[in-house]
Image (tube, rainbow, N blue to C red):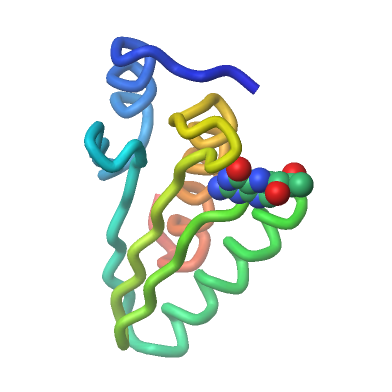
Length: 101
Ligand SMILES: C[C@H](O)[C@H](O)[C@H]1CNC2=NC(N)=NC(=O)C2=N1
């Protein structure tokens, strides 16, 4: 697992969709608005499966049709390549669930 430098995080975010970095909280986050609550839950189910496969788990906040995903590597107290990899997978899943892309 690689702890990322500020520059590596900035570079990584450019390759992602709508992810933001909170350096003080040591995390990256993305908020996605879906069509409705069932679609939001579908996204969460897909992300949960991907997280289990990766053994890396986002914090997830569901509010009706809006899902906020937060990634940080707790064991490192840092943003790592694992956070970036799961964020990229989340972006793919958002496209699948929303039918965009
Ligand atoms: C043992 C297991 O690999 C660890 O507890 C994993 C599980 N999922 C995790 N997820 C996240 N986001 N950060 C971690 O440090 C982490 N640790």
